[in-house]
Each structure stands twice: as C-alpha cells, then as structure tokens.
Length: 110
Length: 115
Image 1 (cartoon, helix red, strand yellow):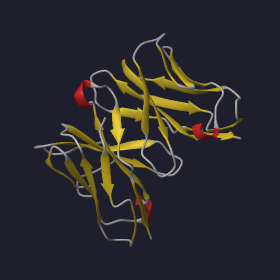
Image 2 (cartoon, chains in turn cyan, yellow):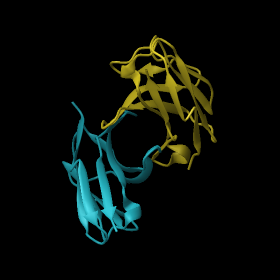
Image 3 (cartoon, chains in turn orange, blue):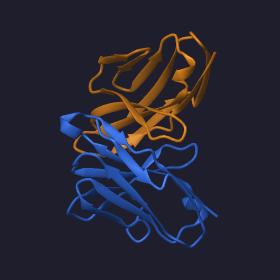
Image 4 (cartoon, chains in turn red, brown):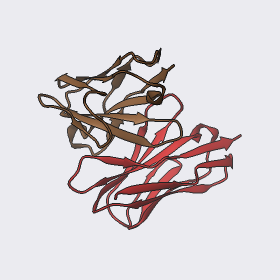
C-alpha cells in the first residue's frame, strides 16, 4: 500500500536556526514527490516537484532533495514568516491520485 | 497558475442537514478533485470530477453521501448529505496540471462544523 510518513510532527526553531523536515514514502513506482506549504485557514500552496533520486530543487530558504525512500525539505536560516505546516505527497506511476502525509507544523520564533 | 475560489468559506450546520460547497476555477480544467482534511490528519481524496462523466469515488466515500456535480470545465459542487458531527472537517477542491505544469492548485477550503 502506498504510504507517506512525515517527521517530526511539529518543530520549533529560533530564527536563523537551520533544520530539515523528513518525508518517508513507499509507493509502487514513483511518478513524482510534491512539497506544499499550508498556512492556517488556507489551502496548500505548491512548492516543489521531484521526480527521481538525486534531484534537488531550491526556492529562497528552502531546498528539497529526494532519495529512493525519502525526501528532505531543508530550511536554511528560517524566518518567522516560514512558520506553516509543510505537507509532502507522492503520486504513483499510472495514477492521478496523490497520497499526502500528515505534515510537519513548523514554528519559527523571532 | 490557477485561482480557485470556494463557497462558503465556513459553515455551522445541524445534524441531518445537507450542505453544498461550490468550487470555481479561473481556467478550464479537465480534472477537479475534492479532498477532506480532518484536524491533525492528512488530506484524503474523496473523489475526482471530470466534466461530462460521473465522479470517481475513493474507497470509503459514496455518491449518496457526497454527490458531486461538474456541469462545465470551470465549476464543481460537492454536497455533504445527512451530516453528522463526524463530517466536521475542512473540504478542499483542487485542480491539476494546468498548461502541462506538473503541480496541483488548491482552493482556500470550506471549514464545516456539524453540531
């Protein structure tokens, strides 16, 4: 069964304190792995798509990496405005369906 | 990108009643998706709505409980029927792959509370 597990569930960082969020997955043929940011009361906002092991993508203070079993979202020198829930999802080959993890709630303190 | 709006943004309903949620997209799209997000849980796909065909429901979701309409390429509705407190959740619509771009766009969600 396709599955996505994110850790930690919650993370508190001081402003400028870099860290990483983990997304472990099992899927029968990965078509793509997706990262989203979700602010309270809003729908998820797309961040990255990764397709194959070794791929990396960056956007401002965020960098996403992918291996055959997991993905990491690295946050470098975070700011309070980076506080949000970060969701990971996978899409298996041959399907339109996305399987989401439960997310990591990130709080960055000034 | 796509701009997606949902109505209502939130509602408080009585047990046994029904609520219809509207989803409007500013572009024509083939597939629209309806998700449920319960507190502290991941997004769960309810169904996929293609224009001109019956919606496809995921395991655990049935048409009698969650009827969906898709009258055109920019609009869809999800009805939550005969509601119970267990239906309290955030309901989200989304669209996929505009202009060949491999990303999914979400609406702002509808927060439903059933008393």
